[in-house]
Length: 312
Image 1 (cartoon, rainbow, N blue to C red):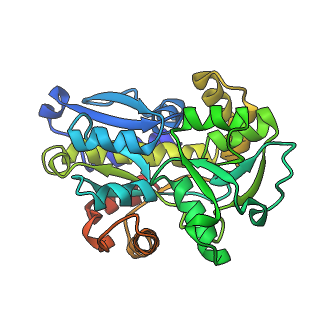
Image 2 (image 1 turned 90 degrees about the horizontal axis):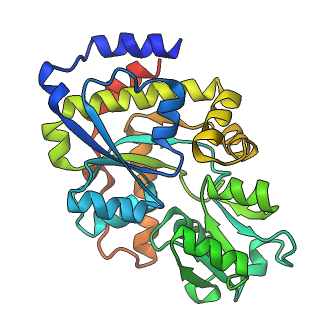
């Protein structure tokens, strides 16, 4: 059904023949866009080449985009804000909405820590400027704590995993699929999620040059991604099995993640801009960015119609 809808959607925005000679360089994070698009079968007739590059987190993906090694990619709202504030050539062209249960602060199964209150003075691993970092700051703010009330160890996911497993940090503020991996495979506990704390947005971002020079390819890619995410909402079990095989991870992990995430692609609209401004304001209050950005100036709404039509 979704594949038929996608085919119809592509008719009104077909690529010209020159597109067949082009390459769209796409950054992805573990088990995200490429996995769902392959599972949904929407990559079989792409009239241009997609060159995929996988990154362990948003920060290195955005560094690659800033350097021109990729042209578009998937990142969370927090690292996107961090990059935009640093002057990186990046615009958000589509939003990814999902529930906020998969962004969480984890503790080991046998940890004496039961709530965020128990983290005072403790060490939490996360990535600098990541959505995990965003969650820590939002939780500190809600509780009226200062930055010195916890110790933040800034680590990439692979290093954070090692530190967390070895006990050199007390907790890990991270995102999916890492949260579900820890919960399902190692019985970690979520002591706080981002529900009610952060917008829970991610973005498909692109370089301005790609928006200008490869608009047809970007539009087509976003349509396919939108259709794939719509397919996944109605095929959670099948997608979880496919994802597990692709990632060589037990099916129970993606089942745990996808059943609660309800991931969908959304156009850049007033609600998205407002939520992104909230992230900007949080980072500005905590001094992570030095100038207060205007969210409307770092997004591009011109792909909204393509998303709306593909998601029908």
